[in-house]
Amino acid sequence: MRFLIVLLLISSCSSNSKNEELKMNENLDHIRTTLIKHIPTFRDCHARAGLNREKKNLIHLEFTIKKDGNVSNPIAKSKNKKIPKGFLNCLERSLETIKFSPPPNGGVIDVSQPLNF
Image (cartoon, rainbow, N blue to C red; front, side):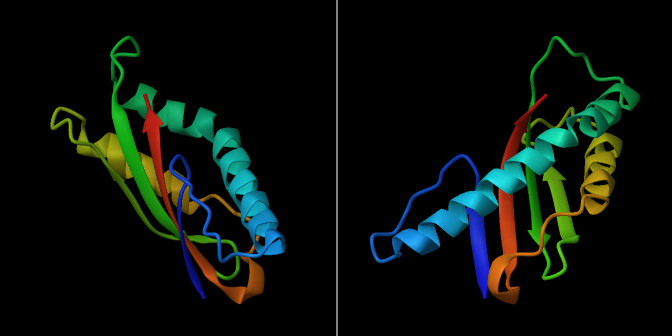
């Protein structure tokens, strides 16, 4: 079973039962909470890249949470061509170190999450 989660643009399907919606919301909260806990690591990547903290940039993170809760296929990208590749690579490496709770029903979850830096 594979889920696609866009954390900021979540819509519920009327065919889902209340129990399924509750489980999905718990997963979303867990993913958000886990990512928030790792913001210091993401900020460290930002500092190492020497990016200006005053200038805001939108970074788009995509990754898969595997059956065991580990991250695979992390991708960090930006439409801003001035963002250093080293910064994006650092974010990807940081994502690979995050351990999430295993997805329900032995499935995987594809996550798409924008971040403002």
